View 1 (tube, helix red, strand yellow):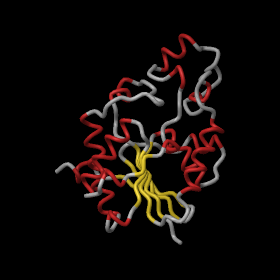
View 2 (view 1 turned 120 degrees about the vertical axis):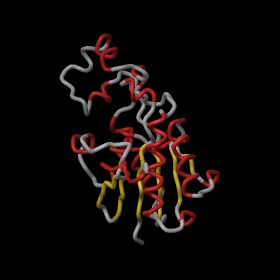
View 3 (view 1 turned 135 degrees about the vertical axis):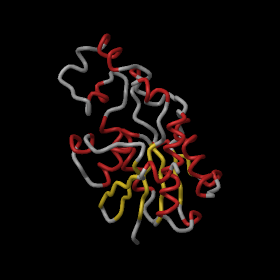
View 4 (view 1 turned 180 degrees about the vertical axis):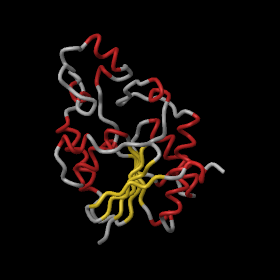
Length: 204
């Protein structure tokens, strides 16, 4: 079987624009975020054949559900057929959720000392560990064995981990992967291809 997975990140949220880390909290899509998802949806429509031949998965968090509904509307896919899976929700930031980097530094300066913009997230005292996230990403990927055509709507950090597990990358390499709300990723034959839309093309 030749499996293809299209991995999509939710659109920009209000928290994204404020520099706040969301984790399992929720923040609605901005107008720009809605446009991003519409554009990604149009791109996806060009890449797939019959949408009904595909199995669609979504994180249960509000920003992904909002994005998934837009994708379903564009593709003509029944939202009721979407499989909502907790294993692909965003990494929990614990008590750091909803805060900016400056707010975190003010209270937990020792915990994020000697970290970088890629690994600091896992220093949260009550958040998820990288190993725990890898475990649920691995279980989700194992669970879709046998499904030839898969679309998944997830998150920025979780999307990095999913691609890292798919390609058997180490932690440092996985956490440095590109993340964008204007790009979807095609996973096929252990290769990963980022596909972006031309903003002008989809907004004419």
